[in-house]
Image 1 (tube, rainbow, N blue to C red):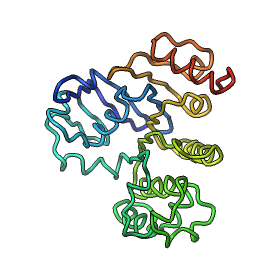
Image 2: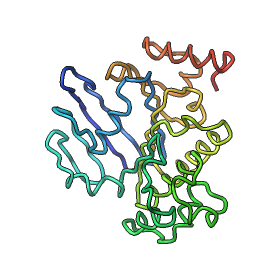
Image 3: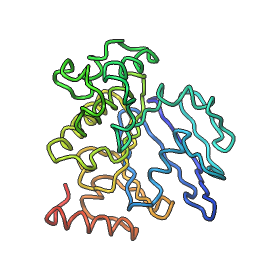
Length: 259
């Protein structure tokens, strides 16, 4: 049986209203689950809850997380409870990847520090090559401010992989990147999926999904509105209002086609 990570019954409340309600999802090794929806639908907030990074009050008011033999009641989980999971089991590729890297550390030092926490090779070049750098030696001594957006994404991905992550949350990984760099990021995620990495891909761009995703979850107003296959997505077989709107907007910018 392949390794899985399961989130059940997540609810998050802000100071004045419910932000995420009864969200459940499952990640599996070698599969990509896409979480799509308009801005403000709760996608990134859900991701941050998985990582134990919801800091406001009351914050997470219900939900359980099961992964790597751990069972966490998220309302009572402490930072220490997340230590066996965050980085070592569950990695994070944020939208602003450059900001996730220590500005005072070279790429070599950042990736090396992550590798020291994992159980794989200690050579940063190994992980940089795995994340898509054809010539890692060219970036080892670069600092984050010297990296392009695409290079920063790949360096952050190398850090996640080096730490031993078997699941990855990729939060809008192609936003703000030019089309050729976007294609490269998606190509590397496809290769990592084939190597057994489980991925939660957060995006509002449905064009990324036909060739990459195994399951698509449509989120709106803090709830999962529907779950569909990529084939149903391409066929336009969406039922939720949020899903239909996303599909129509995507077809508008994709000359009427998806996939």
